[in-house]
Amino acid sequence: LLQYWEEDESTEVVMMYLESIGNPRKFSRIARRVSLRKPIVAVRSGRTTQGVPMGHAVRKIAAPPQAVDAMFRQAGVIQVDALEEMFDVAQLLAHQPLPRGRRVAIVGNSDALGLLAADAAAAVGLVVNKSVALGAEAGADDFEDALDAAIDDPDVDSVVAVYIPPLNVSGEEVANVLAAIGEQSDKPLVSTFLGVEGVPELLRVPDVAGSTAGRGSVPSYPAVEAAVRALAHVVEYAVWLRTPDGVPPDPDAVDQIGARNLLNELLAEHPDGLEVPTPALRELLATYGIDLWTAHPVHTLDEATAAADELGWDVVLKATAEHLRERPDLSHVWRNIDDRREMADAWQSLTTLIGDPVESGFVVQKTSPVGVPVAVRSIEDPLFGPVVSFGISGPIIELLGDKAYRIPPLGERDAAAMVREVKSSPMLFGYRGSEVVDIGEVEWLIRRVAQLQNDHPQISSLELPLVLAGPHGASVLTGHARIDPVADARSDWFVRRLPSAPGDTIPS
Image (cartoon, rainbow, N blue to C red; front, side, top):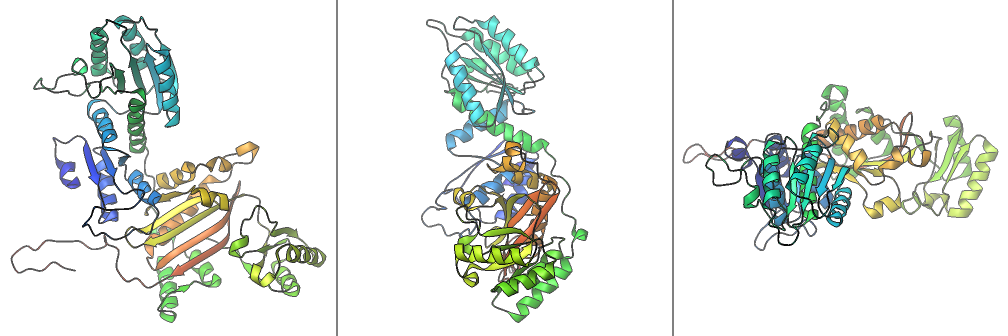
C-alpha cells in the first residue's frame, strides 16, 4: 500500500492505523523513502502492552517500545496517539504549507487563550517568538493587519490565530480574512475559530470543482491545545525533511572480514554461543576502530601492584561487580594511584568498604581523562534485527529509561539526534559550567557500534556501559558482548516473489 500511495498522484497525505508490523526493517526502509515525498501519519495500537487483536499471531518484540517509536521517527513517520489527532494533523498537512522551523506567532482576541496557546507551544518544543493580543473588541481589519505582520516577520515560521466571537457577533468577517490570508501565505496558519473542528465553510478555499476545501484552507480546532499539538507534529516532520541524513557508513573504513572471521572462530569453538572474553572483545572492537581499554582483574594486593607496574602506574583500582557499578552511595573507585604505598592504602580502604575483592570484581586500569560517563548498547532483536541505544551512564538514568534508540544503518542525522534527544543531554553541552564534550567523537562511536551490529547478526548483544566522554575524545573503559549462531536470516535479506505461473513455487 505504501508503495502504491507513493506513486499515486491523487494521494497527498497517507494515514495509517497499525496493529502490528510484520517486517519492521522493510517497513522502515519503504516508509523512509515515501516520507521524503509524502507525509505519513500513523496511529499504532498496543504501544504500551504490545498487544494485538484476538486471533492475530505475530512475533514478539524483544526491543523496548521506545525502539519502535524511534523507528517511526527515523523513517519520518508522524506517529500520533489517537485517531482524532491523526485527522487533526492530516488536515493541516493537506491544506497548509510546511513550516520552515519551530518559531511561532500567536494572534488572538483573548488574552487567556493566547496564554494557553503559548503554554501548549512551549510544552511541545515550539518557540513563541511573537504574541499579539488584539483585545475582545478586535475586528476583521485588526486581525488582517496583525496576521499580515506576523506572516511577513522573518523570525516567524507559522501562525496560530485565536478568535472567540463577542456576543451577537457571527465572526464572518474575521473568517473571510483568515481564508484570504491562508490562501496567499507561504507559512502555515492554523486557527481556533468559533469552537469549530475541521475546516469551517467560511474558511474553505474551494478546489477546482468548487465543492471541497483545497490548498490554503485554514484548519480550525475546537481548542488551542489541539491546534498547537497538530502544528508541532508537522514542524517535527518538516525539520526531519530538511535535515540531510549525512554520509552513510563507509564499509572500507572497517575490517568487516576480520570481524566475521573472528566471530566464526569463536562460534566454531562454542557452537551454543558464549559471553565473549575480554581479549577477544577488544580484538573484535578494534576491527571497527574502537579502542577498548585494558583492565586487569586482581584478587590480591600483590596482583594489583604487579598490574600497576605493567601499566606504568597512574592507575585506578575499582570494583566492577554488577551490584557495585556506578553506585552513588559507595566510593568503589580509587583514582590516580602512583606507587605501592598508595596502592596499599587504596586496597585497604576499598576492601574495608566493599568487602571481598573477588566477589567485588576488582580491576586495575589506567587513569582515564575526566569526562561524562555515557553508555552505547546494541542488541539483535528477533523481529527488528539490530537496535542501538545511547544514554548517560548511571542507575538513576537506567531506572528512568532516559535512552535514545535507533535502527541501523545510521547516518549522521540519526546519531546526532540520539545524543541530543535524551533528557540528560545538557550534561554533554556544558551543564553548570562544565566543559562541552567532544560530541563528534560520541556520535562517531554510536555509528561504529551500529555498523558493527548491522554487519554481524551473530552479535546477540554488545554493551559499552562506561565510556568517558571528555572535551578531547571518548575513552571506552568497559565492554561486554554475547554472540550466538544465527538461526534465521534477517527478514529483509531476501527478495520475495509471487509465483509467475500455476505450479511455480515461491523461493524460500
